[in-house]
Image (cartoon, rainbow, N blue to C red):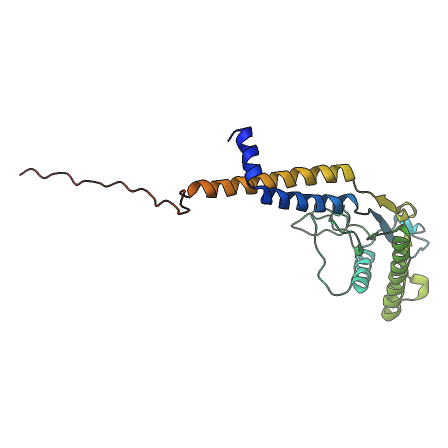
Length: 231
């Protein structure tokens, strides 16, 4: 099909072109007016109790503390199954979430194995405003501290031997996640135009398969003559 034939086909199928233009314009308007979001990944570090032998809580690593951090996360998030990702660096924003939160023990084992090697939790929060994210951040950190204290009281741990939790200072920053409106409009226009042309070409294909009287031609068959038998 030449360019001129394509133009004639578009004119001939103007209702399809009109519907495609309306849908494309509506989608483009939605993309152009979409608001951005605000995101933070707060790291909650679990610390062992200090002692004469281990005076620096930040340098003390313990599998028991990692297990405790995982239990606290489960108490906060509830009994639902935790989704496993190929990398612990996956964020809610990267998954397309624009409002919500997650709390998890980072798993560095890849997609097919598990490996919990750090005694810290990742608290991801994404929301429509910085104030909303900050409020959720404060509430969830308080809940983590409460659940940790409740577990240790239930286990009968002496307060002098308590595991504590702190927030990594640099991880509390809240970032604005913007929307590239020019790119969104461009992609919407390209996809809309492509879908419209594809619909028109399909309509032309169906039209050409029909006879002038509107019927569909029957498939042609070739008769095969049997060879003559010579006696």
